[in-house]
Length: 496
Image 1 (tube, rainbow, N blue to C red):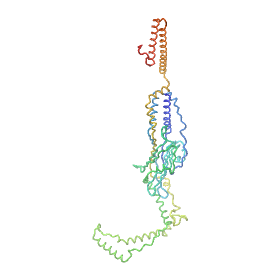
Image 2: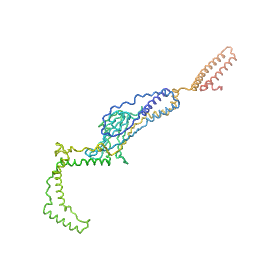
Image 3: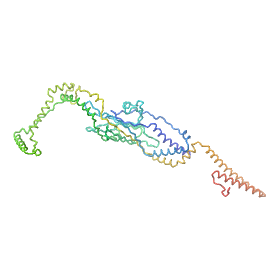
Image 4: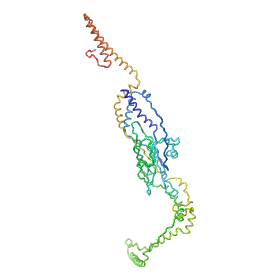
């Protein structure tokens, strides 16, 4: 029975402690960054763990009784811990610019893919994948146990975007053990803050439930679709971004105007309907009305003067005539000559029905604009991995703690080397047990001698008395032997 209990305790300690030692050796780091594209499927991560063995014999045989009691406590606590739900959270932060200026003087997003990796990093070695080697945030990546890619999708016509998960791969859990479940729940909390911002301009959470080892979800997998973030507003463009965009607009302004003169077809106005104000009877009556209003207004204060929207009809007619003349003059011969000198359209482009052409000699953006990004912001993520507890492990932990004295005693008696005092004590105990056996035989011998003395013919009283004395001494010696062996005396009526 003792050996069975010892085997159970040692086995439990090995199962629970070995994964914890390994987890401390290869505690993975979490990193986050924005890329201009989502990476392709990763290559299988190399196995960095290797084969690990743990031989307890040399350790167990060298520890004392107190250490064995501590080992029992540790095993019980580990079992109880395995019975409780646990969340392991890691954080990461990175910084960069959100916008860049396009050649057409618009602002576009620099990084369109959010990548979160938990894995092993070594700055002294090249990364296992080229996309990581090319990124300052992921340089030195050797292997990944968790990797998520979320694409930034703009909402058409709105200054909002969503983070849409495109790829999730989980190769290894942060903590594992014999009693831990085979699945985990993950929560990725993302917070985006511009430089100097008191509050984040955007934050969201993406949740993934019941993820097992070697999970690989891509594109339209339903767990990815259900984790799409709520709309997040774009950050306000910084002053340097506005300045760069304005500078580029100024560079393009003459070319865009020349292109409009040369390439945009003129507006074709429909013949307007005859104006009701051209009717002679209307003109007389409206003149009479407006003159009366002017006469009346001369005696009224400004705040009480009369107004009729039909009186300025002449001004409205003059404005319409001017607009028509300006539209015609927009593409007069002089402006066309200027536009031709400024904008060089290819022969195939110089067609009035084309609406997407541009000047072939349009200058490229200045290098300080083209190679620069704007609106600095920080990205902070918290990756939480949660495992449920094992009711069986919790029960075993409580049982192991309750049986600590018996288990510790069994371990000590079977595994610890014995001291000289313990050996002497065991020798005394063995001698006491042997003395009990000898005392029992001496009593049997004395009883047989008394029987022979009584049965001899003729009986000799002195021989009978001598036999009784020998039997009494044997019983006294038997009581003494039993007491030394920590056993109850067989003849309690004899006080000796």
